[in-house]
Length: 362
Image 1 (cartoon, rainbow, N blue to C red):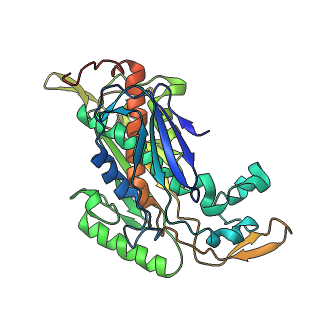
Image 2 (tube, rainbow, N blue to C red; image 1 turned 45 degrees about the vertical axis):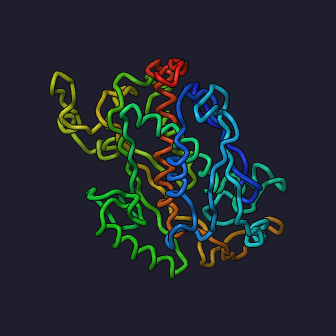
């Protein structure tokens, strides 16, 4: 339930309003110098309170790596990272004990765990749990970058604002849209919706470049299945598509097929409608997928719910600090989780040898 991966495994622990959240990685390749500053940079990209467009919960999100390293290098033992919660206000959530938020997991937690559920801040189903996902996934992302594999996610749309061009680094813009004009338009929309007490959803696109072909398995362990399994662990994600996705359903075969060609002695496809994956196996072209993130369910508008003790209708207006568009902070989460499962696939396939490095000079 809290563990992801096959050979490379990730377990997360903690809760939104507990003392800390954290992750343990087992099976990471030996002898990798962990770039702590790189991890901290990705933690900053995800951190709440860093922009007026995100939750105003002010967390430092500094990481503590408490095991798994010797002199800065991975030593073959599990890597454990903890992130302490320092800005918790549980009083905002007292009303949620009896009145579940529409669109949130409050009610399903009640159905599954009853009075033992942790409802404060969403408990272990809070977006706060993406912090340890980023911390662990950033290590995998750094490893893949050392192999020349590049993974980039960015906001393709926020509400009805679409961005169909990349003219800058998405992390230079508050909205994570990779274009200044799109950033300004979406920022204005978020501010307008936020003032109204409402929220927005968005679409995140991801591109993986220089990933080798021949990785993945047919049927139940397809690359699409593995990526989707990880991505749906991110709160508020409701859909995923690879390549042209649902648009393929309205195409003809002559349009949807990607013709093969040879460039510089390498077999490639002239188009990439299938997103770099055929039969569940990578073909060497960029892996492309898009996800839909629903609007943040915690909004400052009155909503109808039901009191769990009396089974009578009630009205709830959510208090507290919540993202007007949670998709923005999901961008680095998607990058890091994708990196983690792709590295796991490379280890499973034998493309990466966990024990291949025996010296710091290798």
